[in-house]
Length: 72
Image (cartoon, rainbow, N blue to C red):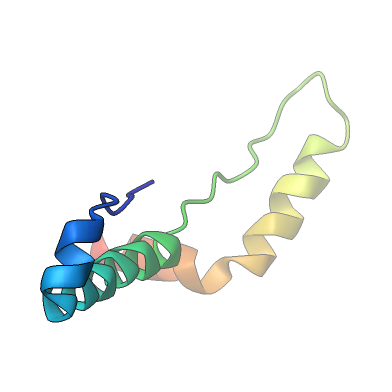
């Protein structure tokens, strides 16, 4: 996580610089939050429900899976 340094002298002397730093930090946080990574469930021979869970999740993410396959 990214934190803005707590520098009160900057805020008092030049409020525009402080506001610019906050704006940049918020944009970085939004970008980081928009790039969520998911792990697909894989089939496990010793777990009887894993095949069902794997296929169910594949249906949920079929568009992302199709896009990935098209790129490779």
